[in-house]
Length: 190
Image (cartoon, rainbow, N blue to C red; front, side, top):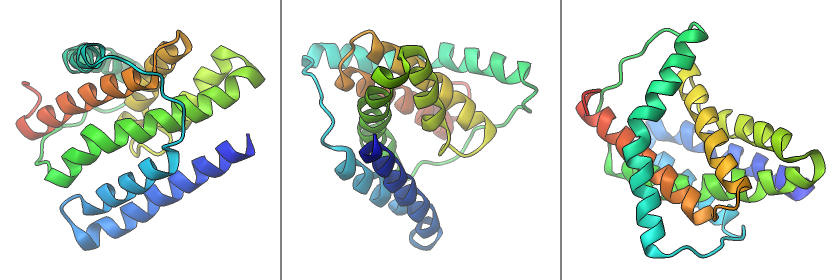
């Protein structure tokens, strides 16, 4: 468990460093560098095999399921009294690589592969799922980002608890991020 806590703190430190460097290097390079370092740190989590067809289906499910996911999170956010926010902007290529490849890889390995796996035998499946999802949401700054990440963490953690391979969780995560990048770049009509 100590190793998992050390890994979690190391990743959060790398994310903070990436955020500090980002304004000085621009173009999403800070996030890309910290994402690559995080991916290297968590690379050792066990990853069961999944066929290419299963991974494509999982990615497609994440991409196609994004509108429903956003609708559910929006309803929850409104119920919590969060003010609506506009989502538009451009996406740097380095940011796209981070969101589509690096973040799904290292976040799933860290939060579902290491944290959830370490907590589950100690505190039980439901508390481990809730705590690992809260820890996943924590570095996602902003109330809406934290809420959305926490909800996605619950869903992906539940899949993992049900036996889904980490690669499937990563593929769904990447599909969700791909649709989110499209919405960000094109506006909410996508």
